[in-house]
Length: 226
Picture: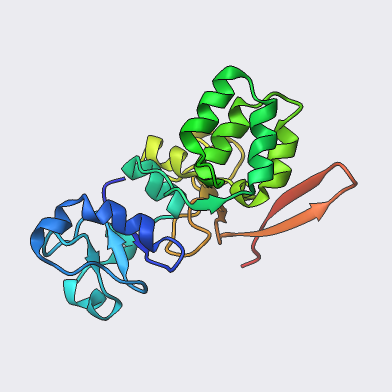
């Protein structure tokens, strides 16, 4: 993906600015981008790698065609960046409990990543989880649930669109053999939150989602009456 942009929020600001500080933008003398503005792959007018909402129209760009809105997870994949570690503190009692049950290699890990007062990071907790045996994994996860955010319920179709350079799902000849237009179903590419995680159904048909029974949910296309 060559041209992209992402909204800067309170939640992702630190992570996005860390990337910006290492980009070409830092050398331009521009101020850092702010919450409420947008970080972008490259500003078309300079190397600042961001723009403000008020300046959006001044660049004369068709954003929907030339730049693609991405999610934070897509940003991490594109830039090969990782989430910033968050400093946390666990109780000394719990730290001792982990240490007493640890193997030698696990003790080395604890010594390296945990301070005596229990100060550590969420990343270190996840690392400890990976090293733990099956008996201790559930305990660690239960003790530090905030360090294990649930995986998004949404699918990410960006790999498909990036790999194939298009949003089509069904081959054209297959679609035509079904009696449908070539792009009757596509990955939804838009500037909305549905981008790369939903399907666009061609408006030339009516679409009906039907639950046949407890095991079968079907999507029925029908012809529009002219």
